[in-house]
Length: 171
Length: 103
Image (cartoon, rainbow over all chains, first blue to last red; front, top):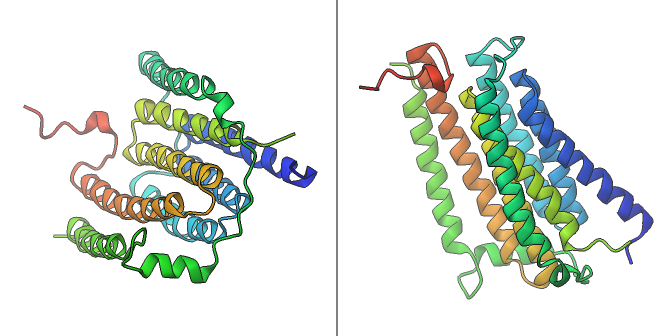
């Protein structure tokens, strides 16, 4: 049985995720859209904290809120006048978007709800993965350990830095 | 009230659908990228929730999310570099106006 505080926290997080996601895609000022995205990412980090993955929540805040949203804001300020509204949607395009979104919702929602009974398991007990254990798993070479993907991601990030500098450089 | 898995999957599903809607309707390339981030984030939530509820002793879902976050960051940085380059060439980042390479 969940404690009352846990339930209240869950509803706050869920409502924040839903409301700010909708606002992110419907607001007509693009800088506001980026701000609402920031709130969605914070709510997601709170959800990770609630599910006992503290390290993941911290990474989510540091990388997304600290890195990606700042990049978004910079590029919005570089490429558009932040006060402008975007043009009103053509109704054809809005209908297309609504059809795509609602079709996804119906298909995936039906798939979820038809298996609702199998998902009724209560939250199992788990001790938080300690930093020591995360580090060992990230750096180990044994079964279920992640040294190779870690190195691959580091090479990918290096390639991405070089590519970003090359593409955005002034000629 | 018992908070089961479905309670976490529904908000994540709604977030994904918002991402799909935004990706189809937006014209500005940066706004499209923001919608893409929403979709990626929804998938990350799913990984973590399945890991937490079905395999609580293991960390596969958590590490997958960790790597997905890193790759999303790389992808966003590169996409924004491309968008800034496009802006320099066309003075505009609306996808409807980018038809220089057509024909």
